Image (cartoon, rainbow, N blue to C red; front, side, top):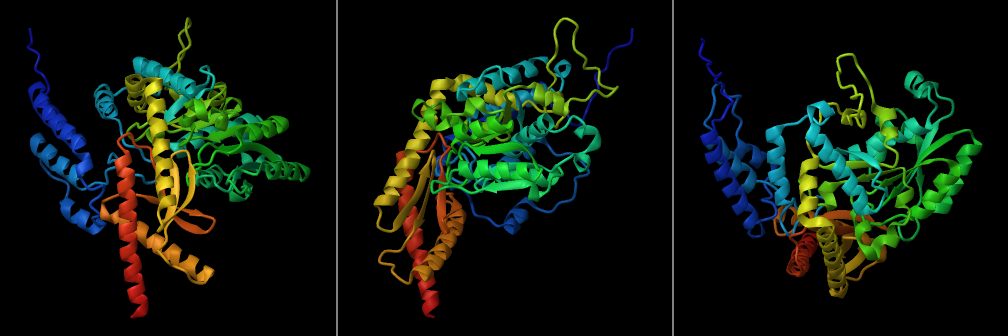
Length: 501
């Protein structure tokens, strides 16, 4: 009888070595997380400096020891990265990642299910389905909604956009294409909508002229009277409206559109109603904010990013659709080499029929585990605290003689630095203040004490803090005020010194 000889492979790791390296890595990461508040938010190193640290070596001909690899790589990443898990990271809309999410990603990668077809990922498919249901329940829409986990906001919105087009276009669209479709298909969104809509218009063959930019009112919400008027105008000239996008927390200032009014208009004209809630819609779970989100139950689709305000590690976006059949109608295909047919007794859920990808990683696990660790009430508490901290930042800026509080919505606050006793011609002053605050932002982003982003509000260049960070405290907010004023004073002095030279 021939003795079985196990294959050796240069990429394999023995059980004992995996345990040693794994334990060391977990120790390193746990220490990193425990001391993250003592580190700079970013080192501010330039791309040239980073490249020098990384080196320019050619592809190695021979392998390197695993312990050496992890030691060097840990140093590269933990000591030369921007840390969005830092309690003073308030930039863009990237959250502090849940530690359980990091462990979940390790577990998911170890099993490595392809969550494109049920036969390839039976348990992972079931977990993703349950995650979609829980996300629906959390924000207050029907748990019978369907959906799919994707990479982030762009893909979540793209996925819904194409489903909307399939649902509202003539059935011949798939064969004949847009060029041969009678009447230009047009769609509507406010001027505060994220740039994904322009990408969609270009990539999916409509062109940016098909976008109907609806003006906003004084509160930066979509003007629904202007929306209704523009739809009627388009119908009169033979255009084919098919989609309206409402914002549930716009990216600059966190404003939520009048979703109920938009839903009514969509129903009147039989248009698909999509909500871009990639950032803000988790706040719909907070009892005192429910009325702000009235109308979400009427949405045909919703974009939601767990890697924003549900604190999942990147990447984790989600498209929710009231009737999941619209996703199947849009994305399903059955090539002869797919043996993923349904069981006669029970239909299978195959996620390749729900979106653009066939091969899919197990994004849902980190979301599913965190939802269980914290529970609905835990998430409501954390999201509420983020909003309270953003409100505190607004109030502290409002009280400070050298800061102007500009806007506050959900967990986003915008403000700017104004030097004390700075009075000049109004137009000149605004130009100078915009220049000063832009330089201030650049300095803060490099300095490592706090990381903010920017927003342009009524032509004012503002510092923007978006708090989606379960590590941030009141102490951090008070320190941010001090940092901004201190750096702002220095830059103002330097700018005036240069002007007088």
